[in-house]
Image (cartoon, rainbow, N blue to C red; front, side):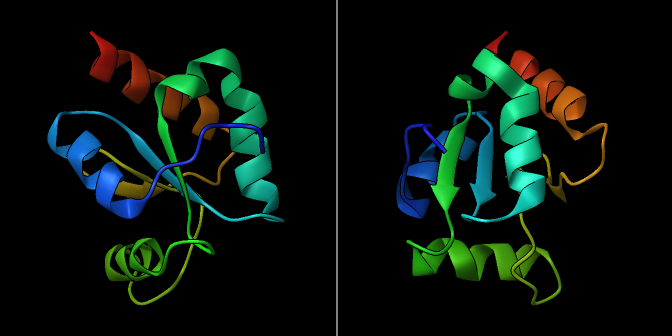
Length: 100
């Protein structure tokens, strides 16, 4: 993945400001599909690798019943797992809403 990476601490600030954060990990086919499906608009989200940030891993577990499920998308309103075929459209809408 060639997206700019952030830490969980940086991501928390983005969430507080109304942005979109995507927690992911290398080798995850759902993460790859989301990344590719988002295209350029994905650059407007904040990306955090849960394998490189223990706090990010713990956060993802806290919103997913103790499981490190990715991609987990977090906004000020909610967190959800974005693994369906409709995920890129849903996440793109969240990014557009955050950018408005």
